[in-house]
Image 1 (cartoon, helix red, strand yellow):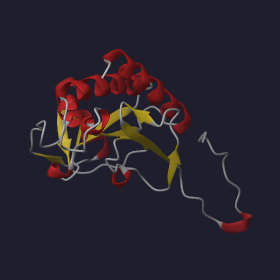
Image 2 (cartoon, rainbow, N blue to C red):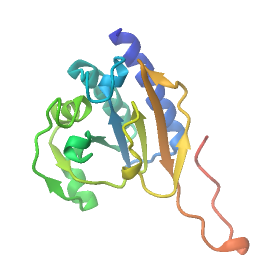
Image 3 (cartoon, rainbow, N blue to C red):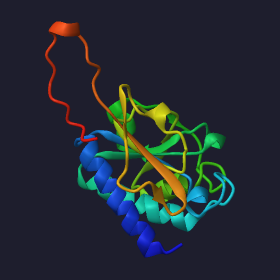
Image 4 (cartoon, helix red, strand yellow):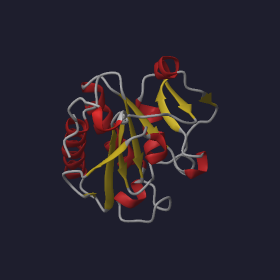
Length: 186
C-alpha cells in the first residue's frame, strides 16, 4: 500500500464529499473505517494502525478546515461508539462512556482519532449530518434522517469499498408547501 497515493485519494474523496454534502460549520461528520478492508483483508481481521493514522489525520484536517466536527466510529466490539472532541459532548449534550480504544477493540480509525484529537472522549451515539464509510462499516445508525446517499468520486480507497451519506431536513406540508432549494449535489 503506497502511503502517498492513499493519502492523496483520501483527500480527493473527503473534499468531494464535504463539498457535495452541504456540511456547514459546527455540524458533525462521522467516519467509519476498516483499515483491514483498505489493505485487502477482511473487516476486523487485518487492522493497520498506520493506515488508520494516515486516513484519519487527512480527514480530520479537511473536516476541521470547514469548521465542522469529526466523529470516528469504532467497531462492533465497542458497540460502534465514537471518538469526538470533549467540547462536542457539551455542545450537543452527548453522553460520554468510559473506554480507551485499542487496535482490536475499536479499530485503527477510532484509535487514530483518540491519539490525534486534542481532548478526545468516547460517546455511545451521535446524530451526524453527513459521513463517509470506508470498508462497509455501517455508519447509517449515526447519520440523522433524512439520509441521502452520495457516490464518492472514487469507489474504493485501497481495496476498501466506500460509500457516503448526507442528510436533509424532512419535507413536510403536502402539495401546497413550498421548500427551500436542495443544497445537496448528488
